[in-house]
Image: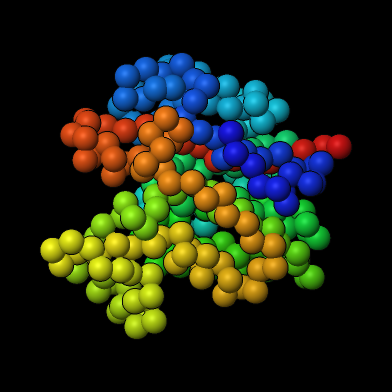
Length: 254
């Protein structure tokens, strides 16, 4: 379990970047696999989500997860849609107390956000595709629209490190097409390949909003096998599937 030092200072906010430890799944999904989209036994995943709910201090019926598609779609949870527990989007925003919004990752970047003045929370699934297509910008714009005098705290969670994120020329070209300055996020890999710094790219997108309180929980999901699931590591090992870690945030009554 990993936490933002800044967000932890607020008694009315609970959050956590969960590791893969502490659940009931086995084999390649060991132990806290929270991915309903994985091929793990559904009952195990549901039990793991119940464990997360208990840890965060909310009812398991109030834990919201996303059907993530690497899009730039943001959904705000309000009284009209709060009964839909699995929403198709790559970011969630809410002002409702005593529900937890969550993001699932296995190398992509989980982002948790708290806006203090207007009491708003958000979570973002930022893979490279969502990040380049505006998922971070879209989420922060929505938060800013919800009230004036924003005071936003952003925590960027564990993700794949640059040394383990080798990409091809086509991938590199996608980012250069967006902005020639993006070449700073790439270094030379082997045999015409590149190494991509996803964390730094995500940080740039956040800093475009002049965020004063930005914190990185800087762990490498690929190399820390005991603590994190990794899509890319599983693929390199020839495993048939992979688990997903969960990161969650909730506004609570105090």
